[in-house]
Image (cartoon, rainbow, N blue to C red):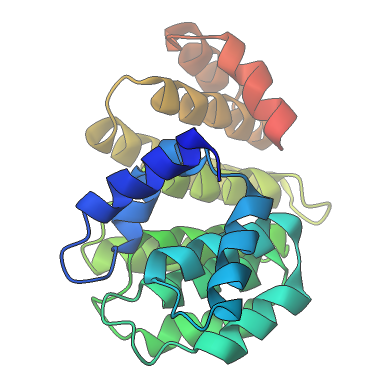
Length: 247
């Protein structure tokens, strides 16, 4: 393992209080985690198993997230079978399993694990994964239902949550079966999300990428004037191109 990887793992070790990292700590450490390659995360997990050691929640979660990124369902299922979620008091592993299954298109299993976490115990990582998973699966109405439930349970959306919800609206707007009345209703949904966004997110690069998603959604709904107004207030207009490339 390289020096950068060792530094990242030492940093994570310092913030472990009881042997576990919360999913939101994992997400906050995303920049640091990026220094460890996906393949390295899987190798770390396999090496620990071969040595007869128990991988930490961080090791398991990093390996599962790598499986999701690679769409490697077979390895992800094997890790799930080997580890389970019994010793997972902060739902760290469960949230990573939801993300892995959602990225691999197995929304039935992702939803089952999501539901097993119980009310008010679902980390933001799990909420975001399930919402985005349904958008990718072509079930944007379901994605927006869960986005609404997330707020009802008092979970604060972040930029990933907003990107998923706005993407769901944009997907509904370009459905061949959507008539003008439906597009108007979808545009109203975008406005509500837009209003919530202005209350929740600060003027950061992440926010500007979400704003680019708003421009895209308003345009697809036929709300060209609103798209123009949002575009003209974007702090970094090049993020519109970035957002479109990420679709």
